[in-house]
Length: 636
Image 1 (cartoon, rainbow, N blue to C red):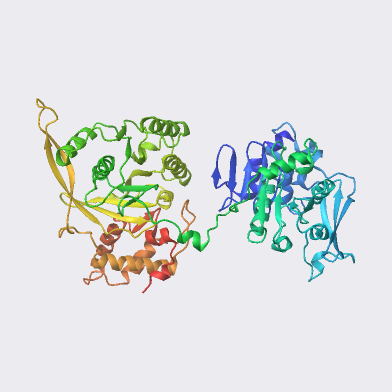
Image 2 (image 1 turned 135 degrees about the vertical axis):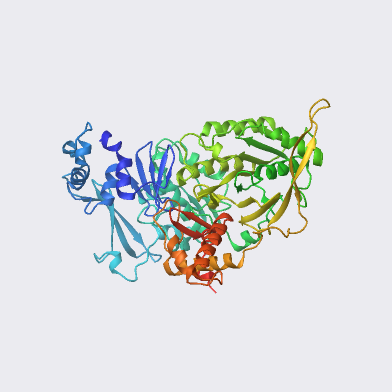
């Protein structure tokens, strides 16, 4: 059995596929992580069906006739026979997996009465294998009666004393235990997960105490009961009893504690102010009461966000970020945008050598207090290493004093994903995102990864690596250098606000002399353009680019499907399908050959500016993918 427990992860993957989330203590399966596996205790749980158990119950729940004698052993032999021969407990010795020969029998019967004291149905507890089944007084099953309605256990008793608090537990045994101590108690039949609104209706205006069993199913059940009582019960308390073993209940607790002690604990617990549900719920009033977006850099970077800044090498990303950091640290406007002042941190993964000249040039052009709280970490911090991320948080905490940390920049993301991390892996990128979220949550600050565009035949395309990053970002800012000294800054994604129109800057060479006897040096600072420059070639889409983007929309309508590609959950088309539609349209007005050349130029421009993303021969519309918009909504 011990060896079989050690194979629970292999067996879970056999039934559920590869895990969608993995930590040292837990695996999660399914698109929404509805199935979990405790890697330490070798237990599984299905949060949708509220079922769980050990490796044997996992097999029984997932094979036809799983409870039949020998079914588990046959499954192991047929499926894993050769593999299990290498373990200490071979399949043929697993007699413990067979059902006991002792027949099932009724060991207890619990009677459910309606409000008039008439017997409505019975619940039979079976043994030796603990199971339950319900029976109507005439011998039928409840499902055979279309008028059947579930009732709280011992309904007449709780109705007879309307001023007394009602203690809600998970099973009939616990109800009887509490009643033996003079309390009014109830439960639903069917155990955890089987409480419904019809049970809560009987408890309007009552003071209710919910005592969950000590396991995840019990806590989920308690939250479900509390949610149903909200707006009905006068008072709701959820009381978890300390010292219980796993799956323990109030009957177990009272074996070593008194009822007076239980009452004292309940009295000290505050009523539930807001129901904790497994999926968060907000009312319209909650949403409307939310504050507007709080900006770190006005209209550009929100506070407490992840904001990616990306572009090709030499596009001006670091110059842009340094100017932001300097402005925030000194409480100044960033060009024509106000900022929230505070401490800022630059994790200089590519080294600090080049920063010297850039900061001296900024000081010469704008003036700067060198004691301003702009802190620089002179090495990369590995986002794939929990200990390294923890050391960064601890270091910032020690150095920031009482100053609010406003921004932490990772320059670059690639330098911050060390070891064997693959930028194209959604799992690796997810780990980096989790680490950045850890920093963000520690200081309630903006975290800014500086990232590169990808390469495809020497032409720029969207942000490099897995699209999991763009999905996790609150803000995405693309930086591009045009011919000469012109730098374009385009907001491609702004989750909670309208995206700004593109901003344009000129690179301005500044000369400086660090010390009186030093040589004169120079570096670059950015100067904001007051108007859109006339010489910018990609400030807006050209007619050909518009036509080719329309062709992609049409191709997505005709041929779009979700490919079997990691991290992609939206409709895509093959490049040749996009080209086919585009070449059926008039692009250049100069014939088929000119159309083919115009398509290539326009497609490359759309990919380079981030309107379209391309990977492994598939292409998609970035805006549609981010917003999960149907291509039909873009069609004219």
